[in-house]
Length: 456
Ligand SMILES: Cc1ncc(COP(=O)(O)O)c(C=O)c1O
Image 1 (cartoon, rainbow, N blue to C red):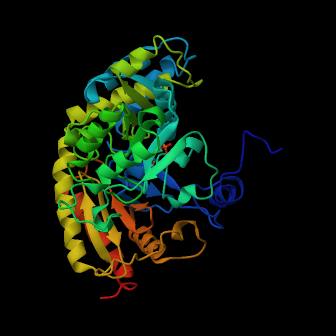
Image 2: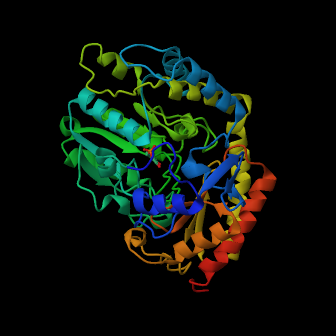
């Protein structure tokens, strides 16, 4: 064994450890190390080569308040010096206060939280609570969605190529289409469709055994990793009514959309819908320390006074994570970040629409708040995708990877939404007009690579 106190750390050493000793997420294991990040501030980060780059992905939509906010770093240091964590059977001040704060900021009577370590865990807890509360095992999920990398969350991530290689686990999953108006699964056009995608859910509930068999439906209010898909305004109110009719729980996965990303505290606030269970992570602590939470409505929480709550974790309600969230969440309010997301989001959407006019490879542009997607096509009339839907899990280059390489060369990071044809742009919610203009100008250049694969 090498001397563990002096592991060599030159650039070549670190590169080798990455290639030989570390798993890179969701990819073929590469022959070269990814770029190494050495620091970050606000909407920018610096890589080992000394280059400053623009973060137009908020690190997979997590760093909503921007990088290295000193108020949060100070709060973390203070809590670390006081009490990093303790056994979850006892209380800590940060855990108690965060549970109260979550009940304040989340919609309606969502008021009891299970605090975990990330988004997938938050969804696992949501499904377990749903099973325990309703006594039913079937869960409806929608195609083109991602709910996390753990076994049950992965089974619920229908139509995301990352789930294809996985064994199914946890829940009995029933899949339905979502409202994807650009490519409607029912061949209809909004609004004359009368929301066929919503009424179809009711049909499926009935066929799957209704109130005896179906416990819940899980949905991202605005689909994130599968293409920034914004539903028509009637969709979630209709789902709410359907769930109420059948006594089925509506589970909103707001891991990406929560905490201001769409221009409201939570995306469900756009439609005044209170879900039965709401899951959060990412913007809860903005990645400064990992944390997630599953928040349930009062009557669901109260039911566990008489029923054994069959869930837990050693690090549940982790003190350092909770203290981080307690310093992050007020920043959305004091710095008016929700309002900025709405205003700058509108501006960014207009700028992205201009790119659609200009570039042959941009078929559709959509978004809500600072959460905008550009869908890439070979041909605007036929809507043939620029890159095959399964390209992400196939080895070898594809047009989308070439655009991503160009973006990296230009010094900007965006999020590659699945199926690989959507480029998601989502800077931290502190972004101003100049920073958005800068990002859009770089994207404009990179889309020329896409145009070379498209038909005029
Ligand atoms: C909507 C949604 N749910 C759940 C997750 C999983 O979160 P985590 O990666 O923290 O486990 C993600 C991650 O991107 C997500 O976008």
